[in-house]
Image (cartoon, rainbow, N blue to C red; front, top):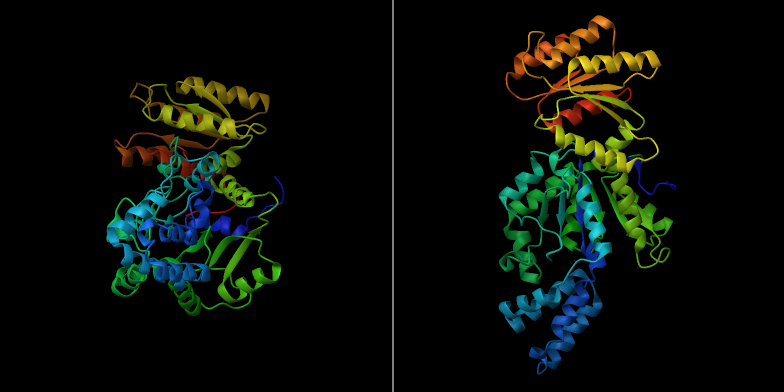
Length: 437
Protein backbone atom coordinates (compact mmCIF):
# COMPACT_ATOMS: atom_id res chain seq x y z
CA UNK A 1 0.00 0.00 0.00
CA UNK A 2 1.19 3.51 -0.77
CA UNK A 3 1.91 6.05 1.93
CA UNK A 4 -1.04 6.21 4.28
CA UNK A 5 -3.48 9.10 4.21
CA UNK A 6 -4.93 8.18 7.58
CA UNK A 7 -3.54 9.36 10.96
CA UNK A 8 -2.90 6.55 13.44
CA UNK A 9 -4.91 8.37 16.10
CA UNK A 10 -8.04 8.06 13.97
CA UNK A 11 -7.43 4.36 13.32
CA UNK A 12 -6.95 3.76 17.05
CA UNK A 13 -10.18 5.60 17.89
CA UNK A 14 -12.20 3.55 15.40
CA UNK A 15 -10.71 0.26 16.57
CA UNK A 16 -11.41 1.21 20.18
CA UNK A 17 -15.07 1.86 19.34
CA UNK A 18 -14.72 5.56 20.16
CA UNK A 19 -15.29 7.22 16.78
CA UNK A 20 -18.51 8.59 15.32
CA UNK A 21 -18.82 9.39 11.62
CA UNK A 22 -20.53 12.69 10.79
CA UNK A 23 -21.75 12.52 7.19
CA UNK A 24 -22.58 15.60 5.11
CA UNK A 25 -24.02 16.24 1.66
CA UNK A 26 -20.63 15.78 -0.03
CA UNK A 27 -20.75 12.07 0.80
CA UNK A 28 -23.85 11.63 -1.38
CA UNK A 29 -22.44 13.67 -4.27
CA UNK A 30 -21.41 10.48 -6.09
CA UNK A 31 -25.12 9.63 -6.46
CA UNK A 32 -25.56 12.86 -8.48
CA UNK A 33 -28.00 14.26 -5.95
CA UNK A 34 -28.17 18.06 -5.93
CA UNK A 35 -26.33 19.97 -3.20
CA UNK A 36 -28.24 22.48 -1.08
CA UNK A 37 -27.87 25.56 -3.38
CA UNK A 38 -28.76 23.55 -6.50
CA UNK A 39 -31.66 21.93 -4.69
CA UNK A 40 -33.14 25.28 -3.66
CA UNK A 41 -32.58 26.73 -7.15
CA UNK A 42 -34.56 23.87 -8.68
CA UNK A 43 -37.44 24.50 -6.28
CA UNK A 44 -37.28 28.28 -6.91
CA UNK A 45 -37.53 27.76 -10.66
CA UNK A 46 -40.88 26.00 -10.43
CA UNK A 47 -43.82 27.32 -12.49
CA UNK A 48 -45.71 28.11 -9.28
CA UNK A 49 -43.38 31.09 -8.85
CA UNK A 50 -43.56 32.37 -12.45
CA UNK A 51 -45.77 35.29 -11.43
CA UNK A 52 -43.73 36.10 -8.33
CA UNK A 53 -40.72 37.53 -10.15
CA UNK A 54 -39.47 39.71 -7.29
CA UNK A 55 -39.74 36.90 -4.77
CA UNK A 56 -37.89 34.50 -7.07
CA UNK A 57 -35.19 37.10 -7.71
CA UNK A 58 -34.78 37.61 -3.95
CA UNK A 59 -34.56 33.85 -3.29
CA UNK A 60 -32.02 33.30 -6.05
CA UNK A 61 -29.93 36.15 -4.64
CA UNK A 62 -29.90 34.52 -1.21
CA UNK A 63 -28.97 31.20 -2.77
CA UNK A 64 -26.12 32.85 -4.68
CA UNK A 65 -24.78 34.31 -1.43
CA UNK A 66 -24.35 30.72 -0.28
CA UNK A 67 -23.99 31.11 3.49
CA UNK A 68 -25.93 28.71 5.74
CA UNK A 69 -27.91 31.69 7.08
CA UNK A 70 -28.87 32.81 3.56
CA UNK A 71 -29.76 29.31 2.39
CA UNK A 72 -32.09 28.44 5.26
CA UNK A 73 -33.74 31.84 4.78
CA UNK A 74 -34.26 31.04 1.09
CA UNK A 75 -35.77 27.69 2.05
CA UNK A 76 -38.11 29.41 4.49
CA UNK A 77 -39.29 31.93 1.87
CA UNK A 78 -39.94 29.12 -0.62
CA UNK A 79 -41.87 27.07 1.90
CA UNK A 80 -44.00 30.08 2.90
CA UNK A 81 -44.72 30.91 -0.73
CA UNK A 82 -45.46 27.40 -1.99
CA UNK A 83 -47.01 25.98 1.17
CA UNK A 84 -45.50 23.17 3.21
CA UNK A 85 -47.11 20.34 1.25
CA UNK A 86 -46.03 21.63 -2.18
CA UNK A 87 -42.57 22.54 -0.88
CA UNK A 88 -42.01 19.04 0.53
CA UNK A 89 -43.33 17.41 -2.66
CA UNK A 90 -40.81 19.35 -4.76
CA UNK A 91 -38.04 18.62 -2.28
CA UNK A 92 -38.85 14.93 -2.49
CA UNK A 93 -38.89 15.02 -6.30
CA UNK A 94 -35.55 16.85 -6.50
CA UNK A 95 -33.87 14.28 -4.25
CA UNK A 96 -35.35 11.19 -5.90
CA UNK A 97 -32.95 8.76 -7.54
CA UNK A 98 -33.63 5.71 -9.70
CA UNK A 99 -30.76 3.59 -8.56
CA UNK A 100 -27.34 3.70 -6.97
CA UNK A 101 -24.36 3.87 -9.30
CA UNK A 102 -21.26 1.76 -8.71
CA UNK A 103 -19.29 4.57 -7.10
CA UNK A 104 -22.02 5.41 -4.60
CA UNK A 105 -22.56 1.73 -3.86
CA UNK A 106 -18.88 1.41 -2.98
CA UNK A 107 -19.04 4.43 -0.67
CA UNK A 108 -21.99 2.95 1.16
CA UNK A 109 -20.24 -0.42 1.46
CA UNK A 110 -17.14 1.21 2.93
CA UNK A 111 -19.18 3.31 5.36
CA UNK A 112 -21.14 0.31 6.63
CA UNK A 113 -18.04 -1.85 6.85
CA UNK A 114 -16.13 0.50 9.18
CA UNK A 115 -16.84 -0.23 12.86
CA UNK A 116 -17.91 3.26 13.88
CA UNK A 117 -19.63 3.63 17.22
CA UNK A 118 -22.43 5.37 15.30
CA UNK A 119 -23.06 7.42 12.16
CA UNK A 120 -24.75 10.82 12.24
CA UNK A 121 -25.87 12.62 9.10
CA UNK A 122 -27.46 15.95 8.20
CA UNK A 123 -28.67 14.41 4.92
CA UNK A 124 -32.36 13.52 4.67
CA UNK A 125 -32.37 11.74 1.31
CA UNK A 126 -33.01 8.00 1.02
CA UNK A 127 -29.41 6.92 0.42
CA UNK A 128 -28.75 6.49 4.11
CA UNK A 129 -31.37 4.67 6.15
CA UNK A 130 -31.61 5.26 9.86
CA UNK A 131 -33.49 6.72 12.81
CA UNK A 132 -34.61 10.30 13.22
CA UNK A 133 -33.87 12.19 16.48
CA UNK A 134 -35.63 10.58 19.44
CA UNK A 135 -34.87 9.15 22.87
CA UNK A 136 -34.47 5.73 21.25
CA UNK A 137 -31.92 7.09 18.76
CA UNK A 138 -29.97 8.97 21.44
CA UNK A 139 -29.80 5.89 23.65
CA UNK A 140 -28.61 3.75 20.72
CA UNK A 141 -25.70 6.14 20.13
CA UNK A 142 -24.76 7.09 23.68
CA UNK A 143 -25.35 3.68 25.26
CA UNK A 144 -24.98 1.19 22.40
CA UNK A 145 -25.40 -2.54 22.89
CA UNK A 146 -22.78 -3.24 20.24
CA UNK A 147 -20.34 -1.18 18.22
CA UNK A 148 -16.96 -2.90 18.39
CA UNK A 149 -15.32 -4.65 15.45
CA UNK A 150 -16.35 -8.09 16.69
CA UNK A 151 -20.09 -7.31 16.81
CA UNK A 152 -22.18 -9.46 14.50
CA UNK A 153 -23.70 -6.64 12.43
CA UNK A 154 -20.25 -5.90 10.97
CA UNK A 155 -19.86 -9.56 9.91
CA UNK A 156 -23.02 -10.09 7.89
CA UNK A 157 -22.63 -10.80 4.18
CA UNK A 158 -24.01 -7.30 3.56
CA UNK A 159 -23.07 -5.48 6.80
CA UNK A 160 -25.75 -3.10 8.01
CA UNK A 161 -23.09 -1.08 9.78
CA UNK A 162 -23.31 1.12 12.83
CA UNK A 163 -26.45 2.80 14.18
CA UNK A 164 -27.34 5.76 11.93
CA UNK A 165 -29.23 8.87 13.03
CA UNK A 166 -30.56 11.40 10.50
CA UNK A 167 -30.25 14.64 12.44
CA UNK A 168 -32.23 16.78 9.99
CA UNK A 169 -34.97 14.25 9.40
CA UNK A 170 -35.96 11.74 6.75
CA UNK A 171 -37.76 12.31 3.44
CA UNK A 172 -39.89 9.28 4.20
CA UNK A 173 -41.19 11.15 7.27
CA UNK A 174 -41.80 14.71 6.01
CA UNK A 175 -42.77 16.00 9.45
CA UNK A 176 -39.22 15.29 10.70
CA UNK A 177 -37.45 17.41 8.04
CA UNK A 178 -35.43 20.40 9.24
CA UNK A 179 -34.57 22.58 6.25
CA UNK A 180 -35.92 26.09 6.85
CA UNK A 181 -35.20 28.99 9.19
CA UNK A 182 -38.13 28.21 11.49
CA UNK A 183 -37.30 24.51 11.42
CA UNK A 184 -33.73 25.14 12.58
CA UNK A 185 -34.89 27.62 15.21
CA UNK A 186 -37.37 25.15 16.65
CA UNK A 187 -34.82 22.33 16.68
CA UNK A 188 -32.14 24.47 18.33
CA UNK A 189 -34.13 26.35 20.92
CA UNK A 190 -37.07 24.08 21.72
CA UNK A 191 -35.55 20.60 21.56
CA UNK A 192 -33.17 20.61 24.50
CA UNK A 193 -32.62 16.84 24.34
CA UNK A 194 -31.31 17.21 20.78
CA UNK A 195 -28.72 19.79 21.79
CA UNK A 196 -27.69 17.82 24.87
CA UNK A 197 -27.24 14.77 22.67
CA UNK A 198 -24.97 16.59 20.21
CA UNK A 199 -22.92 18.15 23.03
CA UNK A 200 -22.42 14.71 24.54
CA UNK A 201 -21.30 13.22 21.23
CA UNK A 202 -18.89 16.03 20.36
CA UNK A 203 -17.39 16.10 23.86
CA UNK A 204 -16.98 12.38 24.48
CA UNK A 205 -16.25 10.83 21.09
CA UNK A 206 -13.72 11.35 18.33
CA UNK A 207 -15.67 12.60 15.31
CA UNK A 208 -14.78 11.96 11.68
CA UNK A 209 -16.42 14.44 9.28
CA UNK A 210 -17.09 12.95 5.83
CA UNK A 211 -18.36 15.20 3.04
CA UNK A 212 -19.09 17.91 5.57
CA UNK A 213 -18.58 21.58 4.69
CA UNK A 214 -18.68 23.10 8.21
CA UNK A 215 -21.31 25.56 6.96
CA UNK A 216 -23.89 24.80 9.66
CA UNK A 217 -23.68 27.73 12.05
CA UNK A 218 -25.21 25.93 15.02
CA UNK A 219 -22.89 22.94 14.66
CA UNK A 220 -19.90 25.27 14.44
CA UNK A 221 -21.10 26.97 17.62
CA UNK A 222 -21.42 23.63 19.39
CA UNK A 223 -17.95 22.58 18.28
CA UNK A 224 -16.53 25.86 19.61
CA UNK A 225 -18.33 25.34 22.91
CA UNK A 226 -16.90 21.83 23.29
CA UNK A 227 -13.41 22.97 22.30
CA UNK A 228 -13.53 25.76 24.89
CA UNK A 229 -14.54 23.22 27.53
CA UNK A 230 -11.85 20.67 26.65
CA UNK A 231 -9.13 23.19 25.90
CA UNK A 232 -6.64 22.99 23.07
CA UNK A 233 -2.97 23.40 23.89
CA UNK A 234 0.12 22.53 21.91
CA UNK A 235 0.44 18.77 21.72
CA UNK A 236 -3.23 18.04 22.47
CA UNK A 237 -4.74 15.20 20.47
CA UNK A 238 -7.32 16.36 17.93
CA UNK A 239 -10.94 16.11 19.04
CA UNK A 240 -12.04 15.45 15.47
CA UNK A 241 -10.83 14.60 11.96
CA UNK A 242 -12.21 15.73 8.61
CA UNK A 243 -11.74 14.53 5.03
CA UNK A 244 -11.52 17.73 2.96
CA UNK A 245 -10.45 18.53 -0.58
CA UNK A 246 -7.69 20.86 -1.74
CA UNK A 247 -6.82 22.26 1.67
CA UNK A 248 -3.42 24.05 1.70
CA UNK A 249 -0.94 23.21 4.44
CA UNK A 250 -1.43 26.60 6.12
CA UNK A 251 -5.20 26.06 6.24
CA UNK A 252 -4.75 22.56 7.67
CA UNK A 253 -2.48 23.91 10.40
CA UNK A 254 -4.96 26.67 11.21
CA UNK A 255 -7.85 24.21 11.41
CA UNK A 256 -5.83 21.97 13.71
CA UNK A 257 -4.67 24.83 15.93
CA UNK A 258 -7.92 26.78 16.31
CA UNK A 259 -10.62 24.11 15.85
CA UNK A 260 -8.92 20.96 17.12
CA UNK A 261 -9.71 19.27 13.80
CA UNK A 262 -7.04 17.30 11.96
CA UNK A 263 -7.69 17.54 8.22
CA UNK A 264 -7.10 14.65 5.83
CA UNK A 265 -6.81 16.55 2.56
CA UNK A 266 -6.87 15.25 -0.99
CA UNK A 267 -6.48 16.72 -4.46
CA UNK A 268 -9.92 16.83 -6.11
CA UNK A 269 -8.40 16.87 -9.61
CA UNK A 270 -5.79 14.09 -9.32
CA UNK A 271 -7.50 11.69 -9.59
CA UNK A 272 -10.30 13.67 -11.15
CA UNK A 273 -13.86 14.15 -10.00
CA UNK A 274 -13.20 13.95 -6.25
CA UNK A 275 -12.06 10.34 -6.50
CA UNK A 276 -9.49 11.12 -3.82
CA UNK A 277 -12.32 10.99 -1.30
CA UNK A 278 -13.01 7.39 -2.31
CA UNK A 279 -9.31 6.53 -2.06
CA UNK A 280 -9.24 7.75 1.55
CA UNK A 281 -12.50 6.03 2.45
CA UNK A 282 -11.24 2.77 0.94
CA UNK A 283 -8.01 2.92 2.94
CA UNK A 284 -9.94 3.66 6.10
CA UNK A 285 -12.10 0.62 5.38
CA UNK A 286 -9.12 -1.65 4.72
CA UNK A 287 -7.39 -0.61 7.94
CA UNK A 288 -10.40 -0.96 10.25
CA UNK A 289 -12.93 -3.32 8.66
CA UNK A 290 -13.30 -6.43 10.88
CA UNK A 291 -12.58 -8.92 8.08
CA UNK A 292 -9.41 -7.07 7.05
CA UNK A 293 -8.37 -6.64 10.68
CA UNK A 294 -8.80 -10.33 11.49
CA UNK A 295 -7.05 -11.24 8.25
CA UNK A 296 -3.97 -9.23 9.26
CA UNK A 297 -4.13 -10.64 12.77
CA UNK A 298 -4.14 -14.23 11.50
CA UNK A 299 -1.92 -13.78 8.43
CA UNK A 300 0.36 -16.80 8.08
CA UNK A 301 -1.14 -18.53 11.15
CA UNK A 302 -2.08 -22.20 11.37
CA UNK A 303 -5.33 -22.94 13.18
CA UNK A 304 -6.64 -26.35 14.20
CA UNK A 305 -10.43 -26.47 14.09
CA UNK A 306 -11.67 -29.41 16.20
CA UNK A 307 -15.43 -29.06 15.85
CA UNK A 308 -17.88 -31.55 14.42
CA UNK A 309 -19.50 -30.54 11.14
CA UNK A 310 -23.04 -30.31 12.57
CA UNK A 311 -22.12 -27.87 15.35
CA UNK A 312 -24.54 -24.94 15.27
CA UNK A 313 -22.09 -22.08 14.71
CA UNK A 314 -19.53 -24.06 12.73
CA UNK A 315 -20.87 -22.98 9.35
CA UNK A 316 -21.02 -19.36 10.42
CA UNK A 317 -17.41 -19.14 11.51
CA UNK A 318 -16.15 -21.29 8.66
CA UNK A 319 -17.67 -18.69 6.33
CA UNK A 320 -15.59 -16.03 8.10
CA UNK A 321 -12.41 -18.02 7.49
CA UNK A 322 -13.34 -18.43 3.83
CA UNK A 323 -13.68 -14.65 3.61
CA UNK A 324 -10.24 -14.20 5.17
CA UNK A 325 -8.71 -16.47 2.54
CA UNK A 326 -10.09 -14.23 -0.20
CA UNK A 327 -8.77 -11.04 1.44
CA UNK A 328 -5.19 -12.09 2.15
CA UNK A 329 -3.85 -14.16 -0.74
CA UNK A 330 -0.17 -13.74 0.14
CA UNK A 331 -0.18 -14.77 3.82
CA UNK A 332 -3.25 -16.92 4.13
CA UNK A 333 -4.48 -18.30 7.42
CA UNK A 334 -4.34 -22.08 7.16
CA UNK A 335 -7.27 -23.96 8.70
CA UNK A 336 -7.01 -27.68 9.45
CA UNK A 337 -10.38 -29.23 10.34
CA UNK A 338 -10.77 -32.32 12.50
CA UNK A 339 -13.93 -33.93 13.85
CA UNK A 340 -12.86 -35.25 17.27
CA UNK A 341 -10.22 -35.04 20.01
CA UNK A 342 -8.14 -38.02 18.90
CA UNK A 343 -7.84 -36.68 15.35
CA UNK A 344 -6.96 -33.26 16.77
CA UNK A 345 -4.19 -34.67 18.98
CA UNK A 346 -2.79 -36.60 16.03
CA UNK A 347 -2.66 -33.41 13.98
CA UNK A 348 -0.89 -31.54 16.80
CA UNK A 349 1.67 -34.33 17.26
CA UNK A 350 2.34 -34.48 13.53
CA UNK A 351 2.79 -30.72 13.33
CA UNK A 352 5.22 -30.73 16.27
CA UNK A 353 7.27 -33.50 14.68
CA UNK A 354 7.60 -31.43 11.51
CA UNK A 355 8.50 -28.25 13.39
CA UNK A 356 5.37 -26.50 12.12
CA UNK A 357 3.28 -26.08 15.26
CA UNK A 358 -0.27 -24.74 15.22
CA UNK A 359 -0.81 -21.20 16.49
CA UNK A 360 -4.30 -21.80 17.87
CA UNK A 361 -6.78 -24.59 18.56
CA UNK A 362 -10.53 -23.90 18.52
CA UNK A 363 -12.78 -26.68 19.78
CA UNK A 364 -16.35 -27.24 20.92
CA UNK A 365 -17.40 -28.85 24.20
CA UNK A 366 -18.76 -31.98 22.57
CA UNK A 367 -21.14 -34.74 23.59
CA UNK A 368 -20.58 -36.69 26.86
CA UNK A 369 -18.60 -39.93 26.52
CA UNK A 370 -16.70 -42.32 28.87
CA UNK A 371 -13.52 -40.29 28.18
CA UNK A 372 -15.29 -36.97 28.67
CA UNK A 373 -16.51 -34.32 26.22
CA UNK A 374 -14.33 -33.41 23.23
CA UNK A 375 -12.86 -30.29 24.86
CA UNK A 376 -11.93 -32.13 28.07
CA UNK A 377 -10.32 -35.00 26.16
CA UNK A 378 -8.36 -32.61 24.00
CA UNK A 379 -7.13 -30.40 26.86
CA UNK A 380 -6.12 -33.33 29.08
CA UNK A 381 -4.18 -35.07 26.32
CA UNK A 382 -2.48 -31.83 25.27
CA UNK A 383 -1.37 -31.26 28.86
CA UNK A 384 -0.08 -34.82 29.30
CA UNK A 385 1.84 -34.69 26.00
CA UNK A 386 3.29 -31.21 26.42
CA UNK A 387 1.38 -29.70 23.51
CA UNK A 388 1.33 -26.01 24.41
CA UNK A 389 -0.79 -24.46 21.64
CA UNK A 390 -3.40 -21.99 22.99
CA UNK A 391 -6.93 -23.40 23.06
CA UNK A 392 -10.29 -21.61 22.90
CA UNK A 393 -13.44 -23.58 23.66
CA UNK A 394 -16.31 -22.37 21.47
CA UNK A 395 -19.42 -23.94 23.01
CA UNK A 396 -23.06 -23.56 23.93
CA UNK A 397 -24.28 -21.54 26.90
CA UNK A 398 -25.59 -24.68 28.65
CA UNK A 399 -23.82 -25.23 32.01
CA UNK A 400 -21.43 -22.44 31.08
CA UNK A 401 -20.16 -21.69 34.59
CA UNK A 402 -19.16 -25.28 35.39
CA UNK A 403 -17.76 -25.92 31.92
CA UNK A 404 -15.78 -22.69 31.86
CA UNK A 405 -14.11 -23.39 35.21
CA UNK A 406 -13.19 -26.90 34.10
CA UNK A 407 -11.85 -25.76 30.69
CA UNK A 408 -9.70 -23.01 32.22
CA UNK A 409 -8.38 -25.36 34.92
CA UNK A 410 -7.22 -27.70 32.15
CA UNK A 411 -5.31 -24.93 30.37
CA UNK A 412 -7.79 -23.34 27.93
CA UNK A 413 -7.22 -19.63 27.27
CA UNK A 414 -10.93 -18.96 26.95
CA UNK A 415 -14.42 -20.42 26.99
CA UNK A 416 -16.82 -18.59 24.68
CA UNK A 417 -20.43 -19.17 23.77
CA UNK A 418 -20.93 -16.51 21.09
CA UNK A 419 -19.40 -15.52 17.81
CA UNK A 420 -18.50 -12.07 19.19
CA UNK A 421 -16.79 -13.50 22.29
CA UNK A 422 -14.78 -15.90 20.12
CA UNK A 423 -13.43 -12.99 18.08
CA UNK A 424 -12.53 -11.10 21.27
CA UNK A 425 -10.68 -14.15 22.58
CA UNK A 426 -8.73 -14.48 19.33
CA UNK A 427 -7.77 -10.81 19.55
CA UNK A 428 -6.48 -11.25 23.12
CA UNK A 429 -4.27 -14.10 22.02
CA UNK A 430 -2.78 -12.47 18.94
CA UNK A 431 -2.48 -8.84 20.09
CA UNK A 432 1.28 -8.55 20.68
CA UNK A 433 2.29 -7.50 24.16
CA UNK A 434 -0.74 -5.30 24.84
CA UNK A 435 -3.64 -6.04 27.18
CA UNK A 436 -7.07 -5.32 25.74
CA UNK A 437 -10.20 -4.46 27.65
